[in-house]
Amino acid sequence: MTVQSEPASRAQHQLERFKVRLDNMPLFRREGRVTQVVGTVVEADLPGVAVGALAEVGGVLAEVIGFREHQALLMPLGLIEGIAHGTTVKVLSQELTIPVGEGLLGRVVDPLGNPLDGRPLNQCAERRGLRSDAPSPMSRSLIRKSLPTGIRVIDGLLTLGEGQRVAVMAGSGVGKSTLMGMLARGSHADVNVVALVGERGREVREFIEHDLGAEGMAKTVMVVATSDSSPVVQVKCVEAAMSVAEYFRDQGKSVMLMADSLTRLAMAQRQIGLAAGEPPTTKGYTPSVFTMLPRLLERAGQGASGGSITAICTVLVEGEDMDDPVADMVRGIVDGHMVMSRKLASHGHYPPIDVLQSLSRTMSLTASPAQQKAAGRIRDFLATWRENEEIIRLGAYKKGTDANVDKAVEMHPAIEAFLRQGVEERESWDSVLCQLGVLGEQNLGEGAAKAAPRSGRPAKTPAENGSPSARTARKMADGSASVNANRARREKSNGNDAKTAKPAPKIKGVRRAPKKRR
Image (cartoon, rainbow, N blue to C red; front, top):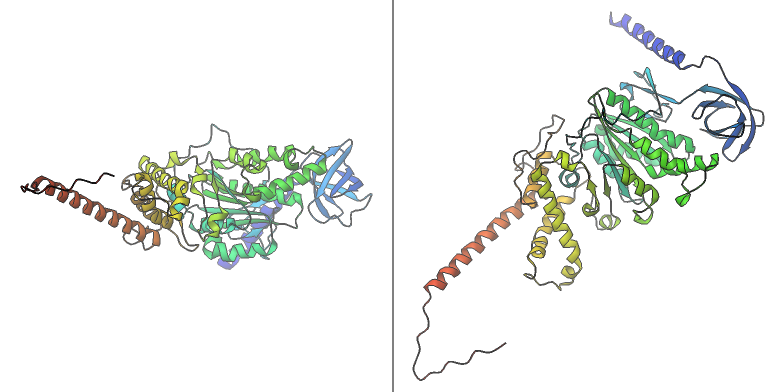
């Protein structure tokens, strides 16, 4: 029976794929001719075609990006060489689609759904368009559940919620890809969807083998468009990844979408807009860039079926200029941002997330009041230390001058150990809350968060946790307790001595030396 069922299932699968192709096939074919080629734009006489349609020009796929008078403007998805005047242009479909299904897990595909790992793509009979509307604001579920990531600084001080959109802002070479790999391995999301836009070709396999690993890749779908790809392909990369994430969200799953980077996406759209004749604005970015970003990012978030898309998108800032047009606009759209500091990275501090410049706008919805108070206390220690760091390191500060500064200096080693974490190190949710409570001087034992971790992984107890920050936090707690006890005993002893001490007897004929005046 098993031998006979396999050919039948294979035939059924092929029949479903053929039916999908028939449904997407146009009822009649539009054809035209190439009239002019300027740069990377092909002009063709193609009446009745719509913007966003997929066409074939001399065996090369191209997308309709606009019109100029009576001519359609097309930008090829591949090499433009070989396209001549009068070449036939055939319209294939009115929109680009990508195959979706469970067979995408653990695979690497291009924005059109073609496998890049040399294996056939199975269990992907359904196709989805790359462009779709965002969910209705009234149909979205509220963000109530936290999403553990296994990274102490994020879970403790920048707690993420399922369906949140976060921007990771950093310069080149600071460690964005490494952080994304840590998130993919340690996240409790059901599915990871990674979009690599404009990356170097060698970095794709490095990211899979070094950053993701076999554990992270098993539940990950990667959509890749390298730096030598056409601007249209690079834009479609993020749109395709979003469509794949929407498919799994519609299945009721928790999806983490990671896009690297939105800056390269904006640059690719800028090239398309300038080629289509759009006027340049700030830093040469065209109006279509600032229209595309909110429409794309609003597609992420909570869905109506119970699933969610937590979007973590990187923004490449030049010279750590946070007022860059793309960075400034993305920061206003998303629900939080993390700033990665080159200064921290140069000191070996990893992950180099600048807590004082970072923010999670949904932390008030997913963290308990005690956790928020502890996080605020730690932020206060960090801010006090940063304001007085120079005079402390120079030795100009005298202990006892300011109680807040003294406390910040005392807690700084433990906080620094809490913020640092190895690439392969993963911290349990309960351990993060325990250490956060010790450092923030709060009791987080009950109701520390409004959501428990999704996965069934056993969380280590604080006593079992052997991480450096846990040990440092316990030492700080024990040290603070012993210091407070010793101080109390000394004060009590001094008070008793003062009460029982008798005044010195006066001796006749002996004059006491006068007290020296200061």
